[in-house]
Image (cartoon, rainbow, N blue to C red; front, side):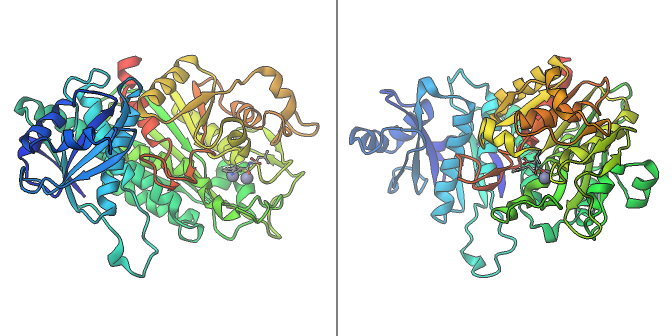
Length: 502
Ligand code: BES
Ligand code: ZN
Ligand code: ZN
């Protein structure tokens, strides 16, 4: 799909379809919509007066202007009540319009990327949001559909039509950023959508290398032998049940300028989590291919950061392994020696995410980072606590958590903080080792966070439990059912604002 900026007026623009927005209950039409209405001899007013269309949130209405204007169709798209309107409904409106037209086989359409006079969004946010909405909403994972491929519908071209010449360069920048960020979300979604037999740790490492090559990142992959030499006993234990060797993937983005802050991003990448000997029930076990969603997000974040040329030094660690039961698998009751030197008693082999993250967190100390951000599908308990749509946030640094909160407000990726009070530490005390990997059922997400905290040291750190939002069971306005790419937009937004707010 190609998105291009065009100078002109939508009502005078030749296109398969132009999109006009309308707020529910507004007597006055949005300025861009009014211009189309006027040029088409009042076709839009007619539809609204007939009460067939009220402008309800994401309500569509297709109008055929029959030669009154150059466009073949006008798609009216409702934005709901003006008082409820915000950037996320705008993304949704753009997505719903694009999906509506795509589903009818329309391959090209045009729209204006902002609403003149709408004060809730800057021109920049509005243009970025619209392009993101279109991209993210049109995502499809079709790689393994071999039959009737001709029936797959795709939009090929979107024209962003802007009447004001002076604004074009400015808007182009926002559109470029939106494309980079959306492509990074696509990358993360593609990785999560892949079945586990197509993304073993070795394959994932190769994909990370390919991304690095294409985006000017450095990539290094630690092999099992290197991990043994380093003493990464936690990740090695998790990997021991599988025939597939684990990979510890490092990606680095380092711009030329000196004195830049170093930020570490860590992504859990269990390419398949069967639970190991603490085997999961077979129902829904197929979903556990998503258990590398944190790693996928980290790869996406690195690609976007490099393409956006962010003024930061970024390092990503993606510990990748399968978690399988076998005669060589680690067992409940085993005691592991982690890279940090701390010993860990394994209560459940299904609490494997925190084990691989423990080694990655300890490894990150070498970089003396200004911040560590980890993303992980860590606990089913997070879905119980916050639902499927919300990321659980825990951390040791108020400023960093506030940055995440601001990024969440802007991107619409919902985040809610859970506490890491000292009293929870009691739950993961071990009788025989320094710590145990499960703290019982109460506060299951928090005890996961408390466990990680033990390996963070003094560095500012935030842990994002994305077990819920990594996968959408139902379509959302701009997130089609399936892998969501959660975390990419959130962390990229945080990193883009790094300088501004530090
Ligand atoms: N990968 C799972 C968590 C998960 C569950 C992610 C559902 C996405 C959807 C994790 O490794 C796990 O199994 N956690 C256990 C922890 C428990 C044994 C302390 C869980 O949530 O039950
Ligand atoms: Zn598990
Ligand atoms: Zn897991």
